[in-house]
Image 1 (cartoon, rainbow, N blue to C red):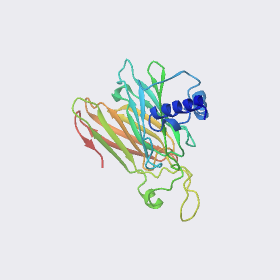
Image 2: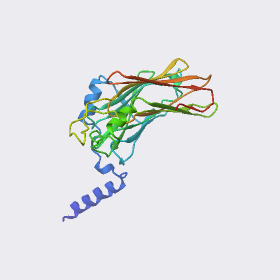
Image 3: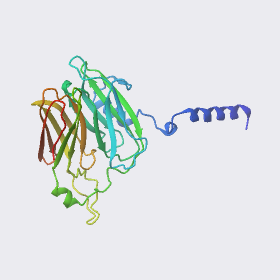
Image 4: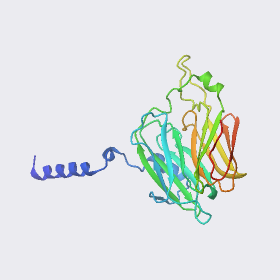
Length: 274
């Protein structure tokens, strides 16, 4: 091998060795799907790529593609002067890339959202935040997972339907700080891609499509979601229980079935619904 060629090869190997683990095999983040989402959902508006306002957290390689944990972490507080008013979770490689669109109130205290999603193929995941000044900010992460959208349900379908709509709402907080609340909904969240292993027929789509949360009569967040959310959807969020009041969660599914759960919250107290 000519000396110049050998030097070039050694330089290339050294550069790859210095990259973070897995970075060398990551495809370009400027995917065709992302270009389409930017043109349609965001009307071609400027989107600043950084982790200074919002940061997405997801595993490098998912253990289970049908239950992939993902968190949207706000890097600014929710104040009347400046806050995140809307969040989007985008999964490029899924059948429908916009997994969630979440509208938030300044009273949330912090625009942190955690959930679990299905991932169909190796993909870029993105968190996009719109701040109160109308600017858009995005954070992205490449996730290695596949087959999650077509994976069979984890439980017997009849058993799952018997528990349909059962909800649990749990609140954890320290006095004087923002509270962390977790909403859990018993729902098969079928997307129409799962096959019944007995009949060999595809199970019709039936999934949670909207979540509304209020506290003391004021809306905290509304989330328009699709079947990317895992079976038995779970949503973790924050709010400020300053004066105490009732925390209410309302869930609407694709068949317009509505389920609600409420829990009384005292400022600085712990609470949960059964």
